[in-house]
Amino acid sequence: MKAFLECIPCILRQTAEVAKMVTTDPKLQLKAVRAATRILGKADPAKMSAPMLTTAVHKELKQVLKTKDLYKKVKEIENKKALAMYPELEKIASGAKDKLDMAVRLAILGNVLDYGAILRFDLPALLKKIKTLKFGKYDLEKFRRALISKKKILYIGDNAGEIVFDKLLIRELQSRDCEVVYAVKNEPILNDITMADAKSVGMLKLTKVIESGSTTPGTLMSEFSAEMKKAYRWADLIIAKGQGNLETCDNWDKPVFFLLKMKCPYLADRIKVKTGDLMLWQR
Image 1 (cartoon, rainbow, N blue to C red):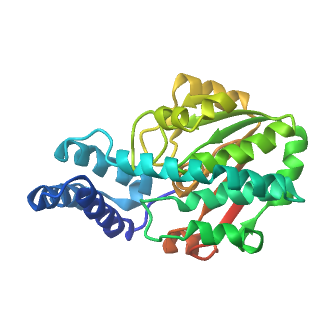
Image 2: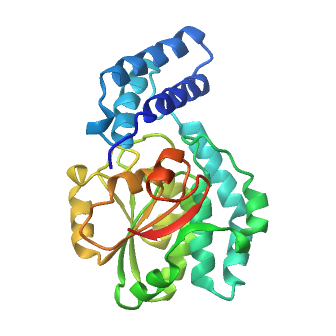
């Protein structure tokens, strides 16, 4: 999916935010923004996806700010916050009449933990009204029917913190005799999860975890690791979390269910939903 012209100022905003997060040196902050401006000044949104634009900028930012993981502290905080909430999340999931519906809602709700997005949310408040949250697209019955015959699932994760919410849906899938392989990033990009995050929240104890090979905030087939290629061939259904995956996995030749909270008004307009809408969508 091609980027929007508006992706350029959005990425510049992200650059300023992350520069201030990593360093208090105003000269270094300005250097980071100038580096991003140079890269974006040469970019053609019509020829790249938004995740590809972000990756190009972040490779330079890592050099300028002298760190391999720009969001390391943020990810640690978000994982700890989500783990602290996990007992409450388990109670909500186990007490639901429709356990699949609730596990999906919780997994999508975890997507609000995204420091790359403009919007911020009060997660505890949202948990209190989770049963009434509205969806722009909610293909739950399609998903429910698919799980009857499609038992081999490749689950592509997204953000730190959110990974803890994913555990609830994976447990529900496993209770339906599904086998799940969970994919994470090979290296840090934004606050996306890596193998280190998966280990820190106990995901490896729950299911098989692989590195996808992806270096972008989405998942590009051209970057698939050997393990990811094998998992893709093996899977008969794919769950893709987050907006970055929606922008990069939209033309795959297997059933893909996208789970996310829509945070971009331009992408929302393109697919006919509203900014802030929750989505379970088989495109």
